Image: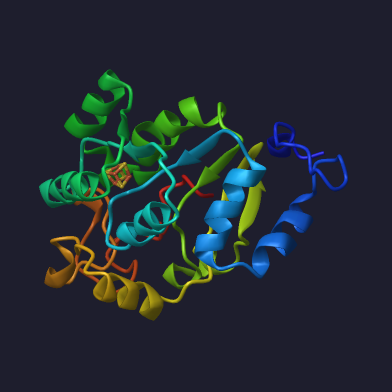
Length: 232
Ligand code: SF4
């Protein structure tokens, strides 16, 4: 039995918790919007995170369209671009979001800033400022929803809609949505664009580790690192 599925509501048809394969099979034929609605029939305690990056608006828009009121957790490393925080405020107003900031340990965060830890050990910097803060809260949820998409990286290409890792069930409802579909949805629905996107930033994280670049090429550009560790 997968740990992350233990708290799941019983499948009314069988009376048993469905396996991960069964969940993936069930959700495979659904649209992203249908997947989000279905999730709320299948699970109780749902964690939604957003980076308020260049594609974040699409998932938030789908939740809004589904009529679901769901707190949005934002990992505030304290190293974000001011433009990201402005964008976050804009989307918060627009979708009437309840955003909950998750902060790192104050001392460790200050030390990593003073030592410019991202230069010497970006994995440790991400662990302190992203992975640990989220790790403190995610155990309290049945499933964690985020907006990863296959086209974003070779790592993400290998994921499935539901993935269980380290006892946490992750749900990626827009994993199979193409980049062109996201851009089209943003344009057709007049959704706000991250202010740095028109300047050439296609993926945006902390200001110290983000350069202009296609897809995720501008993230940790001088290193072999491609993921912050949250999804690994
Ligand atoms: S993205 Fe860079 S600055 Fe942000 S937590 Fe990771 S290493 Fe540190």
